[in-house]
Amino acid sequence: MSAAFDHLKSETPAPVLSTGEAGDFFTLLKPRVMFLVVITAFVGALVAPGQAHPVLLAASILAVAVGAGASGCLNMWYDADIDAVMTRTAKRPIPAGRILPGEALAFGLALSVGSVLVLGLIANWQSAAFLAFTIFFYAVVYSMWLKRSTPQNIVIGGAAGAFPPMIGEMIVTGQFGMASFVLFAIIFLWTPPHFWALALVKSADYGRAGIPMMPNVAGPAATRRQIMAYTLVMAPVAVLPALMGFGGAIYGAVSVVTGLGMIVLSWRVLTITEGEPAVKASQALFGFSILYLFLLFIVLMAEHGLGLMVALPKVL
Amino acid sequence: MAESKAPPPAAFSAEDLARRRRRSVALGLLLTGLVVFFYVITIFKTGPAILSRPL
Image 1 (spheres, rainbow over the protein chains, first blue to last red):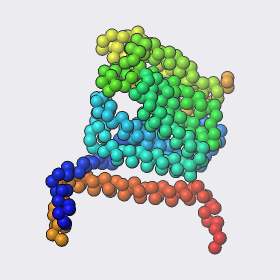
Image 2: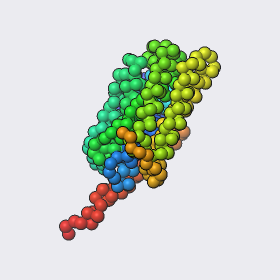
Image 3: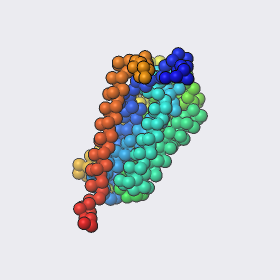
Image 4: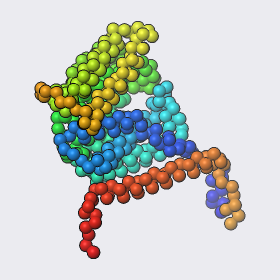
């Protein structure tokens, strides 16, 4: 080596080394969200008027899940600065320093392009285009624009999480119809009560990070009223599959009972506003809302996939 | 070429190198899985027509 490289010996800082392992990269994909996407997209495919080859359908759903993971990864890349100051997210791989931002960006972009191409080649290019739009909507419209600029961030951004049933139907038929649109509406209307129940408890966290969540901007009382309003609209919409004929008797019963549960818990959030009982009421709604959505889609899946469908008289 | 015998940069501890090795193994397994995935999907996508080719 010549003297030309001497400057590298002392002045150059030690290379920043990524210590992330496979598990950290998997965490970047938000596995719990991916799991929900798999279920909702699969149900969208099951309620579609048509059939797909089971292996190709499974591979297509896998591509949708990877696309959802990619958008979660891009979200974590962009939000690393605010994740670092929030207790709920400070241990994520990027703010914790295990994965370098550039690595996460490259990982997210590669998976985005790969998942869209694979879905297009396996299923059809309509569903692939919709997946690309969903990734763009979550990573750019929600993460980069809405999240830091408006208290309606999770309302509008929630559409990204509600698209998978429509992608599922498009995988089978190349287009979407009323069934998957109703499933979209259920998830879309479910998102505000779900996230605002969490935001009521974590408002200090969001405030520290400068995120204009509804409780920080409009106040807890207005947020509680909006939670109640969205729940009152969502619960009847969630019964529509039974009335439209693509949800059976079990779904009808489950959607009515759990919908009433959501209304009761939202009412408790609305009326219990002080101290520890208020925190517990919000936590109860947040926890139950996850179970609620999971149950609705699992029951639909069982009715269509396991032959448990007992058709009710079609009303709509 | 005495320089080639110099030790690796201090930033790479034994634990760092082991971690990166595990990461490389995971990446290798992922790529192998992708090869199998594309192979299987191609067969299912093409169907029986895969046997029908001009000889």
